[in-house]
Length: 78
Image 1: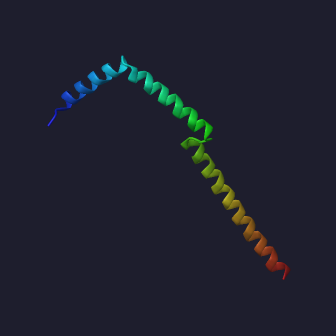
Image 2: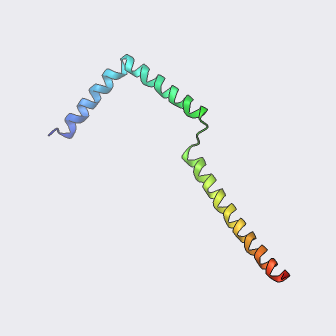
Image 3: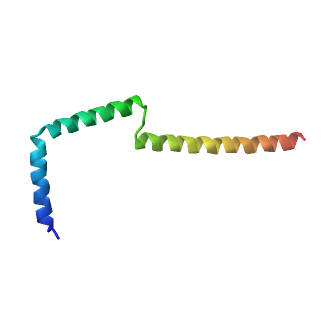
């Protein structure tokens, strides 16, 4: 088995090789392409998603409360 230090050493060497090679440029280009594609897809981040979930929960609670009020009013009118 490899020791932790050996793996870290190997990892550092690979990072050094990649940093000075065209692979580094490719990585930057791929990241830019992905960001551009995700922007075009109108995707939102997790934080925005969570905020919308909370808004929907509050809206659902208000709708349910209004439905209950309407049912009570309908019973009184009968």
